[in-house]
Length: 120
Image 1 (spheres, rainbow, N blue to C red):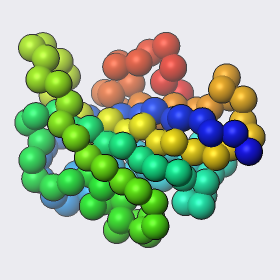
Image 2 (spheres, rainbow, N blue to C red):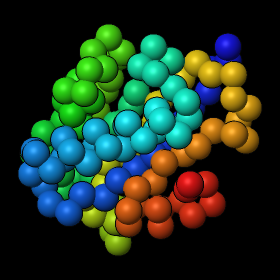
Image 3 (cartoon, rainbow, N blue to C red):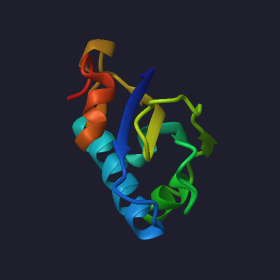
Protein backbone atom coordinates (compact mmCIF):
# COMPACT_ATOMS: atom_id res chain seq x y z
CA UNK A 1 0.00 0.00 0.00
CA UNK A 2 1.06 3.53 -0.77
CA UNK A 3 0.02 6.79 0.86
CA UNK A 4 -1.95 8.99 -1.55
CA UNK A 5 -3.97 12.18 -1.25
CA UNK A 6 -7.44 12.83 -2.62
CA UNK A 7 -8.86 16.33 -3.05
CA UNK A 8 -12.43 17.51 -3.31
CA UNK A 9 -14.84 20.35 -2.70
CA UNK A 10 -18.49 21.26 -2.65
CA UNK A 11 -20.23 24.63 -2.70
CA UNK A 12 -23.14 24.95 -0.28
CA UNK A 13 -26.32 26.78 -1.21
CA UNK A 14 -26.73 28.13 2.32
CA UNK A 15 -25.01 28.08 5.70
CA UNK A 16 -27.28 25.77 7.69
CA UNK A 17 -26.13 22.77 9.74
CA UNK A 18 -28.46 20.25 8.06
CA UNK A 19 -27.49 21.39 4.57
CA UNK A 20 -23.78 21.40 5.45
CA UNK A 21 -24.03 17.86 6.85
CA UNK A 22 -25.88 16.62 3.77
CA UNK A 23 -23.42 18.14 1.30
CA UNK A 24 -20.23 17.19 3.16
CA UNK A 25 -21.52 13.64 3.67
CA UNK A 26 -22.21 13.38 -0.06
CA UNK A 27 -18.74 14.73 -0.84
CA UNK A 28 -16.97 12.28 1.46
CA UNK A 29 -19.09 9.31 0.34
CA UNK A 30 -18.39 10.14 -3.30
CA UNK A 31 -14.63 10.44 -2.63
CA UNK A 32 -14.68 6.95 -1.11
CA UNK A 33 -16.89 5.39 -3.81
CA UNK A 34 -15.05 6.83 -6.82
CA UNK A 35 -11.72 5.61 -5.46
CA UNK A 36 -12.90 2.19 -4.29
CA UNK A 37 -12.11 3.06 -0.67
CA UNK A 38 -13.57 2.27 2.73
CA UNK A 39 -13.18 4.17 5.98
CA UNK A 40 -10.36 1.75 6.88
CA UNK A 41 -8.32 3.17 3.96
CA UNK A 42 -8.42 6.69 5.42
CA UNK A 43 -5.33 7.89 7.29
CA UNK A 44 -6.49 11.43 8.07
CA UNK A 45 -8.80 14.06 6.61
CA UNK A 46 -8.42 17.84 6.50
CA UNK A 47 -11.41 20.08 5.84
CA UNK A 48 -11.36 23.77 5.12
CA UNK A 49 -14.38 26.05 4.92
CA UNK A 50 -14.63 29.54 3.52
CA UNK A 51 -15.00 32.28 6.17
CA UNK A 52 -18.72 32.68 5.39
CA UNK A 53 -19.49 29.19 6.74
CA UNK A 54 -19.90 28.89 10.48
CA UNK A 55 -23.02 26.81 11.15
CA UNK A 56 -21.07 23.63 12.02
CA UNK A 57 -17.82 21.74 11.56
CA UNK A 58 -17.52 19.71 8.33
CA UNK A 59 -15.92 16.93 10.39
CA UNK A 60 -19.17 16.57 12.36
CA UNK A 61 -20.94 15.49 9.17
CA UNK A 62 -18.34 12.79 8.53
CA UNK A 63 -18.64 11.47 12.07
CA UNK A 64 -22.42 11.14 11.51
CA UNK A 65 -21.86 8.80 8.54
CA UNK A 66 -19.79 6.46 10.68
CA UNK A 67 -16.21 7.59 10.11
CA UNK A 68 -15.35 7.73 13.80
CA UNK A 69 -11.81 6.41 14.20
CA UNK A 70 -10.00 8.58 11.63
CA UNK A 71 -8.25 11.81 12.65
CA UNK A 72 -10.21 14.76 11.23
CA UNK A 73 -9.43 18.46 11.42
CA UNK A 74 -11.16 21.61 10.23
CA UNK A 75 -9.63 24.96 9.33
CA UNK A 76 -10.72 28.20 7.75
CA UNK A 77 -9.86 28.81 4.11
CA UNK A 78 -8.08 32.05 3.18
CA UNK A 79 -10.43 35.01 2.77
CA UNK A 80 -9.54 35.96 -0.81
CA UNK A 81 -11.54 38.67 -2.53
CA UNK A 82 -13.59 37.25 -5.38
CA UNK A 83 -13.21 33.63 -4.26
CA UNK A 84 -16.16 31.27 -4.57
CA UNK A 85 -18.35 31.58 -1.45
CA UNK A 86 -19.67 28.81 0.84
CA UNK A 87 -17.12 26.16 -0.12
CA UNK A 88 -15.99 23.17 1.92
CA UNK A 89 -12.78 21.57 0.68
CA UNK A 90 -11.34 18.20 1.66
CA UNK A 91 -7.86 16.71 1.55
CA UNK A 92 -7.92 13.03 2.50
CA UNK A 93 -4.76 11.03 3.06
CA UNK A 94 -5.37 7.42 2.09
CA UNK A 95 -3.72 4.04 1.74
CA UNK A 96 -4.22 2.78 -1.80
CA UNK A 97 -2.63 0.77 -4.56
CA UNK A 98 -3.96 3.25 -7.13
CA UNK A 99 -1.30 5.15 -9.08
CA UNK A 100 -1.48 8.94 -8.65
CA UNK A 101 -2.91 9.30 -12.16
CA UNK A 102 -5.87 7.09 -11.24
CA UNK A 103 -6.94 8.96 -8.11
CA UNK A 104 -10.39 10.46 -8.64
CA UNK A 105 -10.62 13.94 -7.15
CA UNK A 106 -14.21 14.97 -6.47
CA UNK A 107 -15.57 18.46 -7.07
CA UNK A 108 -19.34 18.46 -6.77
CA UNK A 109 -21.73 20.92 -8.36
CA UNK A 110 -20.46 24.46 -8.88
CA UNK A 111 -17.21 23.56 -7.08
CA UNK A 112 -16.12 21.72 -10.25
CA UNK A 113 -15.11 25.16 -11.55
CA UNK A 114 -12.39 25.34 -8.88
CA UNK A 115 -10.24 22.63 -10.47
CA UNK A 116 -11.36 21.92 -14.02
CA UNK A 117 -8.00 20.26 -14.59
CA UNK A 118 -8.62 17.43 -12.10
CA UNK A 119 -12.36 17.39 -11.37
CA UNK A 120 -14.08 14.13 -12.32
